[in-house]
Image (cartoon, rainbow over all chains, first blue to last red; front, side, top):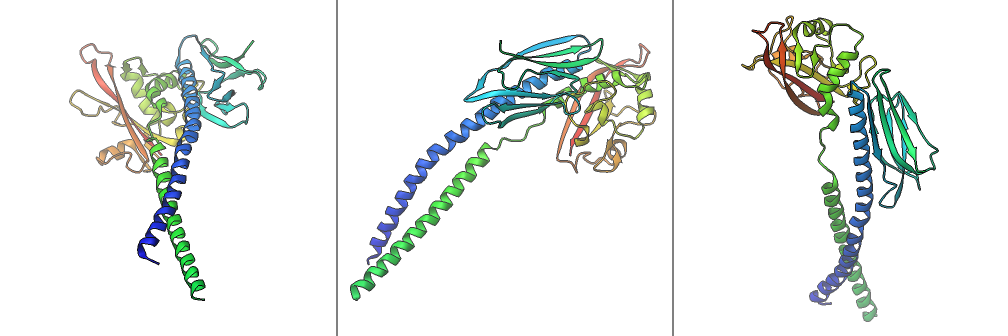
Length: 143
Length: 193
């Protein structure tokens, strides 16, 4: 067998594998990107809610703010879970498979008004009652 | 027989070529995935909640069960109340006041156990203002020393910590004397564990 023949076989095999690699490489970032963008958007929303909660927490007068919640992020239907003190935690999950998309620790939340977990959410209301020094969060469902 | 040996040799060469290609392919793939993951890993940023530490300190001082220590309000620092606060804290930690929650305050959603903070005031000439014999408030847990002691060694206060942040705010230092009241700088050093 000639050396050039070995080299040709090597090149042929490597080319086949290289094409497989290119095919995989073109698919790989797309799927990763979609997941990371969903989680990224969810985390941005979680941070936005946290900033509003901090603003309410530090307010020395009555404070109320409504935050519109998108129904979906990419293909994920969203579910918000908020836990009052002592957890003071916000979780954004995919309603379809329960996967956690984002998490944020909130200021000390005195009370949370939650609808049924299966109902779509329309908005979130954060209230600070300065007289009673009470910070509450209400999740308003779609009507 | 000769033909059989020749074909076996050829098969061996092909297998060798194939495994070489496979190894090269796997290496190529590993390098690609490694670079991709590395490029995806965003540079770790400072938590945005730390922007609110001055407001959190002010709020916590307001809700503290200890009376007369709310020395900081808007852009004004009351020297008499600051002296009371310094007497209360001494060489102890101020992490609860800066990062955490005191009394009935609601905080900013950060856990003070993950941070050590130092608070000090500087005059126009850059020197630290002495309040009741102390020029820097706070305690650095990882170094096992007060901010005052660490500052006196002129070393980086956060050198044993993972991350550091220094922020400042210009404030009016109210000495209850119109001729001595002046603008000073309120400084916070936050070391993240």
